[in-house]
View 1 (cartoon, helix red, strand yellow):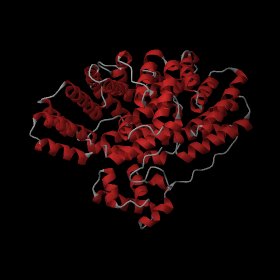
View 2: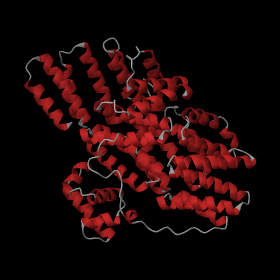
View 3: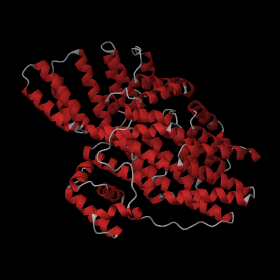
View 4: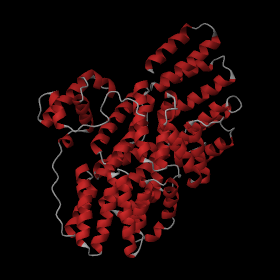
Length: 541
């Protein structure tokens, strides 16, 4: 993208005819935007605006201004700009209008409850009122319809459309340009319908196509989305590496985005001090920029952290705040399960009234093992008497099939706690030991401690955790070590992480000292292998 931007810019400078010069300047601005050079892109837009421009070009200029605003700030100033551009396109080009409505809806998802104008419902209603797409509907059309219907009519109506959209993006009929533009939103749709497998596949492809195109603008969202896949799978070390890559790209481009991966990792690890710093800084930043989804995320992460630490009143307060956002927000939906756990643990079960119904509306419409497993776990918490066991066992079975180690271990912990309180100590020990060993092995320290205490109370013993060599490294050191261990040279690593070669060499020296090794060849012997360490990642289908 950076090379394309340079060629387009030079082409515009060498073009004498004003109309063609304006067109090529717009193309240069688009490439600069995708390459993450936001100030340069805005400067080119100012040149192109002098024209002459036709109506379509003016609408494209409006679209690009909204795209740059969204990519640089992720705040509440982008949705109104993109909504205006979509309306400009409507009488000119139906396809471009619908694509721009989808851009506006994506920006409105980020703005969430902090939207100033062009909020989710307004954009969704405008998109549904726009001319329909030509048949057969393309993947972006299905995505637009699914999100708009879900927002205005609920999960039962919107989930089937989103499921079709996700399947369409997993097919081979989507162009590279469409993948680069929409895959992150397709990942979001996969999360909304609780489709972990598609989230995994599409997020890996998103990182790959973004790398291949050199589209730095897409990488912060791509990496944060990918980190979530690793976190739910309980692969915290690889999640930390992906977070380090996201931070490198954001620093290089000046892009603003909530610390999704870093804070979620700290919360699930139970690292209170680290999470507190990220929470305070993140909440202040997202409030300033108007990134409402980031605010819901911070509150969800706080609820997860506090539930792990056993601070259920604080978890309940944070979860209630997160639940106030829209139904098209991941974290608002996921916070329902944290609310139900915290409410039952604080003896205020009345707070769960309506929460389980809202959760059930989503999970039944989705129908995946992830969705139904989470519903069963939550239903078990509020079920009186021995009938709760049926739901706990269903939750464990479904979450095991879904490959969600963190959610599975949480179900085993809750079931073990329930069994111990019914004096079924032997059965309780089995569940609690499984939960503890999972939490301990992945580094979920707060949940592991909670399981250890329960296991000891049930008459069991917890094995000491062996210290993993990767724990001695910072996330950036671990990432550099993995890349080097997979054969990447210092220049390769520097280019990928936007560091100088001297900085890479400095970090590698620290890695050697911490791990007690003397050469790159030894890295493969002391570090675990992982899927996200190749340079670059190839698109997966």
